[in-house]
View 1 (cartoon, one colour):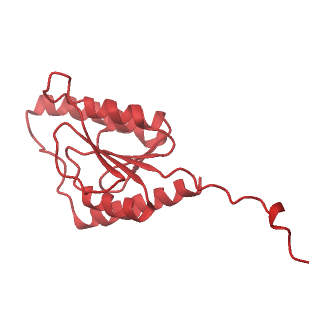
View 2 (view 1 turned 180 degrees about the vertical axis):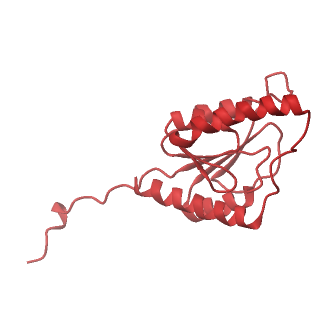
View 3 (view 1 turned 120 degrees about the vertical axis):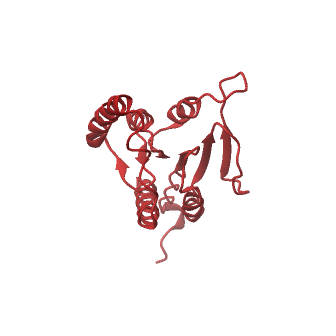
Length: 171
């Protein structure tokens, strides 16, 4: 006998697409984010203090934040991202304090080199940041910024973002 179609369970709805929240002012992997997001049908919010071009896509939206007086407010982008972050979000940032806020909200957080911030690594990262700030204050400009961004960093980032989105799709 043919199975009765009315008794078949309805297919489970797809989980809501993940949203990638990009702390975009100093983000070297924006193009990679757009590519991976497109493949996964993920939403992207490109959050910055200053406007710049984003791809024309229904899923990519630019969010320009200011301090309300028209001037840039350097933690306004962080505040917006932290308020939006939840368990369906992937936050892309190098900012340790923002990463910590987003982890508390249940989000996944990736650095530009693909390393993932997690509850275990964030405490020591926050402490290290404080030590480095003290050192830099005492050393007056020794040590310069982060190391240059490499091809390996870029490919590590692509793999990490892919992996996280696959996991979110299953969750």
